[in-house]
Image 1 (cartoon, rainbow, N blue to C red):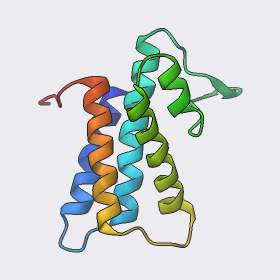
Image 2 (image 1 turned 60 degrees about the horizontal axis):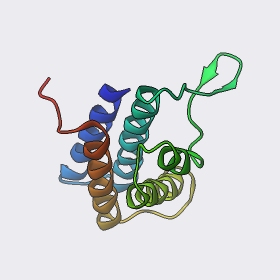
Image 3 (image 1 turned 180 degrees about the horizontal axis):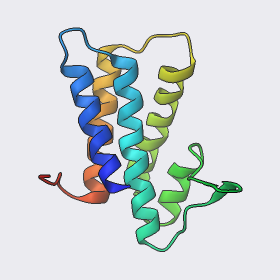
Length: 125
């Protein structure tokens, strides 16, 4: 999952660097970067990925910020940042409102901080 975290972070950057930026998609990718980083870290500290239904395993989105904090993967500030990213991702993916480039940039900054907190510096592939 760590590779998916870095890949989603890179995708969010690209979506905001375009001449015609895509803030909704960028905010969604930023969230998934942080989500995958936390998923990886949760597994690393011995917390298995939950099976939400037979054969389908993933961490529940709304619960992950708290669970990652409880497991010591995130501190309180990073946990709150992840929860903010959850809310932005829901707005970006499911609500009629359009996110602004400024909100998406903040999402990218938050996600970058979380991914670096959890995984360290970005690898050179």
